[in-house]
Length: 274
Image (cartoon, rainbow, N blue to C red):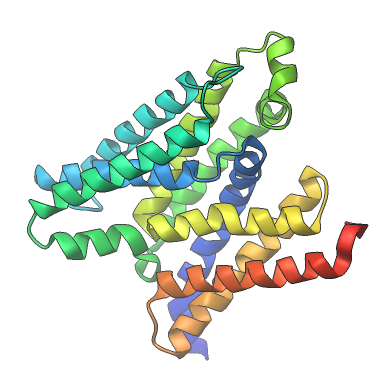
């Protein structure tokens, strides 16, 4: 048992840090109705990473990270600029297009790279089991800075997420605040994809937040429920992957699916009392 805890303490800690920032951002995403923005930005980051590999940088090198970040910030700017008061089409349509084009682009780039299929799998599932202390320190410091920034500007960000029409009426600079949100969101996604992969990052963002919406009201209560669900589910998924010798990323994603089913059942049982 002690050997297992020594082996898994860093993945457990990484999951706790990922849950902390992603649940908060996920609540914003759900309120904005752009559920797949995380998946789209994650795929844009993956496209940047594949291009970095094609020009000779390793998948987890500093140079490749900044290439991915540059692509993600371009995607964030596109989402902010297309935020209109009365859009002709839902912004989710643009999010879906960006995801599809970025995914296709990554496949095309990897088709020209040696060992492209192995690199694609690494982008999808990450390297959560092999995280080390320097990487833990990096994401904790980075996400702490972003968390403090969001706390300082929480009023306009929460207003735009929950009541965008009122934000426009009050004369808020909605596109600017949208860029702040998407840019910081993009930094988180780029760092998280490098660690956990596209699929797991999407699960960390959406599933605990949806569970929180099912079971609680108010931002504070939903954060607590989301953090609890995210940490407990990811730890359970890692333990299951170890016990049954399964791929870690895929096992944790499936564990999140089970968690969502359980929370949906609880919601049905509670009815309108929450």
